Amino acid sequence: MGKEENKIYLVALISAPSINTKSCAKLCHWFGSPRAAWEANDKELKPIFEGKAEAMEQFIHYRKTNTPEKLWAKIETEDVWVTSIEDETYPIPLKTIQDPPLVLFGKGKCLSYEKAVAIVGSRKATYYGKHVAETLARGLSDEGFLIVSGMARGIDTAAHLGALKSNGITTAVLGCGLDIVYPPENRELMERIQKLGTVMSEFPLGTRPESWNFPARNRIISGLCLGVIVVEATEKSGALITVDYALDQGKDVFAVPGPITSPNSAATNQLIKEGAKMVTSTQDILEEYKLPAQVAFKWGEEKPPMNLTPDEQKVFSALGSMPIHGDALVQSLALQASTVQSILLHLELKGLAKQLPGKYFVKSY
Image (cartoon, rainbow, N blue to C red; front, side, top):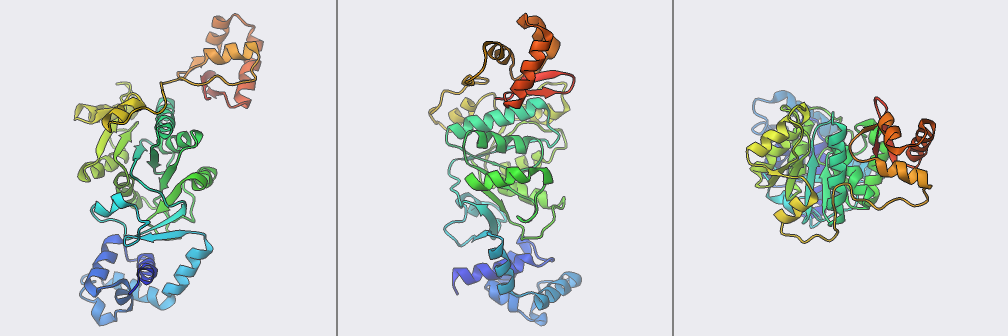
């Protein structure tokens, strides 16, 4: 029986509403192949579904209304690639984790994960957290790292954006089917990731982003990588599930320190106390993996943008990664308030500055 046929029947099995990765693996092991599991009669299925009569009925009904060929044809119309654990294109690091996904659905490129790190954290991230995540992702991308995250709001989104701004490669691992954009505001981000990197999921097309999908998703994020960097996390953050998986998988855990008064840094500060490696720059990651810096990267060190007037350059230079109030800018620059306000607006339009609540401004270049 060929790998391609196995893959087609694996997709059919995993697409059944009562089947997940564990139960699919159990079925295939019991019957000897994905096709044999799909074609098993009711009597043969009973020992596998013992005590789960409803799940068995759902599976039997699903087989009556779907065929492996029909399900495979739908995938092909969605321009989705599929790799199974038997394929050479399957990510090598995932083959050694507990309960590896039997199939992965993807859009974009099939990538190598020899030099990948995950950047994860709170969905309700602070400006500090998002800035750090984006900066780390840019710096690590410059050093040739593949950035992996979950395309959630907050830290995940910032990490993907940082990699893309460096023209680096990034992978988004979803907790839903690839035909569903979640969160919906990340549609453009998802399209950009597909062009340079990969959007992948172990969940078949049509799978909704249910809360119970995300812990399973997190084991893939950590499994793909050398290590996991937690940028911000509350004491009950889902990012800590990724940390637990990373530890179980023998991966490195890194954490970014934050203000002791910030709930979003409570878990990262605690992780550092418990032995996680503290990260304050990309150099910390390079030193951990004994890699020489390809690019001399420092926090806040950026090439000045071109085509700015002298006054625009003066205002731009006064901005930094930490928020500064508009009134403080006026006082420090010895310029008219109306002039500073006009320049700040122009810098925002050019994507060089960003206004925060309370009339605070930061550099966004």
